[in-house]
Length: 316
Image 1 (cartoon, one colour):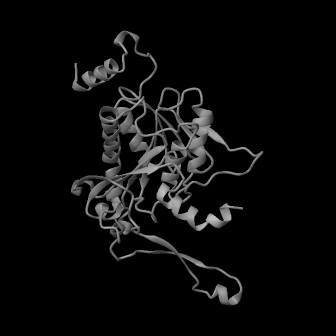
Image 2: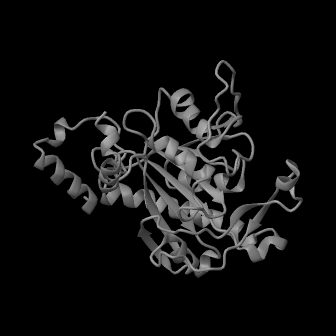
Image 3: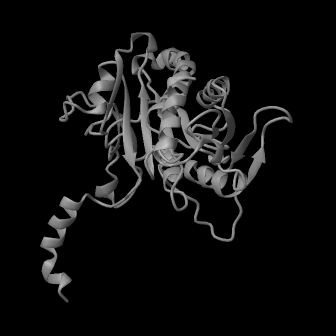
């Protein structure tokens, strides 16, 4: 019997449950998991295909439910066309791993998968990625469709579905050569995700849940992967991103009362103000793992601060 099996047995005995009366229900703390795989790059992108292969090779049952087309930067956006229809299509051949496309945003694809396609056989885990490009810090994650999909899973239903977002970095110096380091890292990133899942199963699974209620992980995988320095697990503290999308009024649209405003990209060169941030660790070559809380509420300390400032209004 393995060490992990002994630990499980001890937990059963400590709670007064004999092995013969243990529930036969599926337990995501061991063995094969039912995983729903999604992304924001599209159902047939190289990152999601490599992730599917790695998770299947690890012994898991994987169903892809992902956007029909490229949806990067959509964040948590959802369709509001009430009374309209969103097209879904089974893209896989009979006998192959199941792949569904959803003609909408990453968040919609996640909710469609959980509430319709897999409603009768819900997954133990949702994995979003691997994404083409890193999603770091506070500024770099707000608009991410990859993270939007993971957060949609964590917020789904009464208890949420544990979720992992995986993003593979890009080296902007490779822009002229098609980012070969990123494509080479998709396979290893998928294998690393499988290792993360195994670690969660063995070291911290509680009540059949891989992660705390309504939580998800944001993993960023630097390139080239051969030069990685290790793994750092910390808060998502970074205040800056590798790149910023900026608006520039190069044609004087404001002065003219209207016109076109240029959307451009800026590469900040100043160091991140948070020295222990995920952004700094990623730039130093570390795989970063940050835990995201799906609770939209502020911490109690900040809540109390605001309540004091609004105390006169609250009395009316």
